[in-house]
Amino acid sequence: MPEGPSVRKFHHLTSPFVGQQVVKTGGSSKKLNPASFQSLWLQDTQVHGKKLFLRFDPDEETKSPGNNPLPEPLGKGERKKEAGDQKQTLGPDSQKISDQSSQSDSGDNGSACLGGDSPAGGAERWLQVSFGLFGSIWVNEFSRAKKANKRGDWRDPIPRLVLHFGGGGFLAFYNCQMSWSSSPVVQPTSDILSEKFHRGQALEALGREQPVCYTLLDQRCFSGLGNIIKNEALYRAGIHPLSLGSLLSPRQLEILVDHVVEFSTDWLQDKFQGRQNHTQIYQKEQCPAGHQVRKEAFGPPGGFQRLTWWCPQCQPRLPPDEPEQVQLP
Image (cartoon, rainbow, N blue to C red; front, top):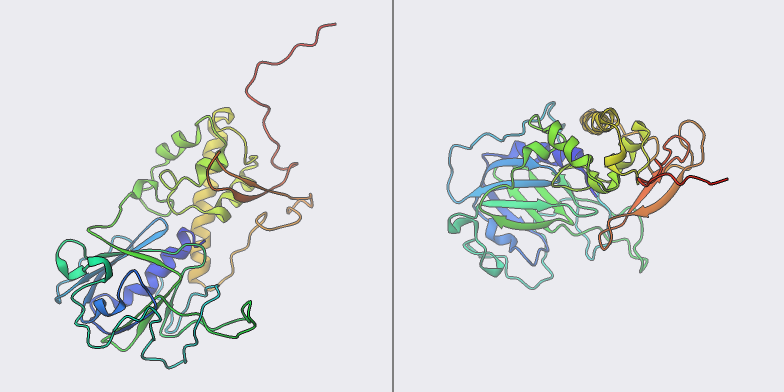
């Protein structure tokens, strides 16, 4: 699943299109009619945690500045890879993307979306994009099949949405969940890559009487933090994933938050500089110290279980918070 650094890279990919008009559309989305974006203007892009927000308006306006500027412009053709088995081939120079949902894209004036959602209808002008497990955005090119699917077909993935802009470029959205909203969901104090990230709130959340690996993946407390960051931060802090936050010292909690922010920031910079992110424990068989790594799915009762890698020697588990049993002679 794309984590905070990846979504901020997606935000950077879309930013150059702000102020441009959509002149052609395509895609296989059934929830949103791609033709409804025709002639709309992209006025702003924002990123919050793991979600990207794009503002579209029916008329050209003075765009409002995004609240998450990112450094170092990307080269033309920069792309994001995605995985997934799709159903149709796209040519490298495709201008029209067929829609297997039997929607009539051509000739639609873009005044309505399926289900009655319409960015031109007033308040709902922000497109909220969630990337799920394999979501991605490609710029000025389409994703290509890297291997045959289960049926043995070499078919390229089909984008959910394609937006061609007046400036000549286009955006292709793959495996994304998209919906209209009246405004972005803004919680900068919990966003691990925001300048407004509130360490005090993060430390308070980690200090709860529950395993810290549960708290780290709670987007209400650590927006943008995913499974890779969770594993790496816990290993580098020397903390067992099932350690109860209430048993950790204030210093240990401080160190854990430090590693969350440091690893996330370094990962983002690696993305902008074209370097691959290097992990120490995630999906490894041995830790950097040469110890055997263990892997198990952890998650709250009745909740989503996530694979967790940890080193029993480098990350010893604290004893349970129970009175010590005294052995009588």
